[in-house]
Image (tube, rainbow, N blue to C red):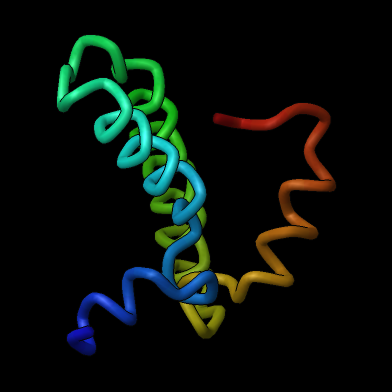
Length: 85
């Protein structure tokens, strides 16, 4: 497995790994019918947007690392009233 692939499949590096895997699984199960998996694609897109906005705000605030580690992301999601994506 390449370094890039390992990096994108790491929970610390990819906050939307679960959504990515769900959309990939849906595609496999539905013979790559994109219309059947639109829900999963939308959920992944919303996840990426949510964490991208968090990353930008942390960069503006001077917080390092820009992307919160997995444990911190878990706490952020738990602090919200409902799942943002």
